[in-house]
Image: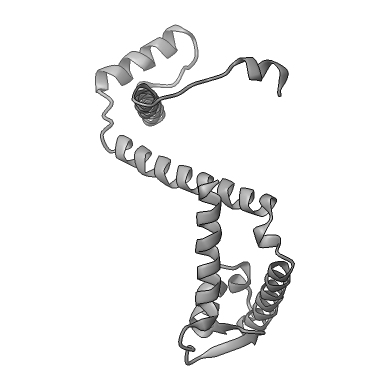
Length: 184
């Protein structure tokens, strides 16, 4: 619950801070009290599908119209206190958690993959087992890249599982399995 209030406070400060700072020199548009600077417009435009269109001037005009509509909808939602509703705050919390998981798991995977080395003997052993099991008729040289890649991914997966296992060992986890039976 504290996280929800923290996120709400951060959002309110960010929203209030956006329109009250010293005005930027190049204002592309103003939507009520909110100013869209050229810098903000350019950053968002370049990340949008509009940037890949052939007629750049028309694309920029269309994107600006879309951005203005977005700001109007956001302002209307804020007037109606949608940004304070439990459903919205829950959505923000879920997004925050998923983003943190994605970024941190990516960092951890990169860290682990940098330390993975698959010995040639292990690759040869995997290949020999595939031939023995009748899974391939290709040569060792043909399959080497795929076997090497798969073996590295398997090691990475085991290391990630070991890491999460260590996290669980050092954590205080309590499970009430009785609640799982009835779904209550």
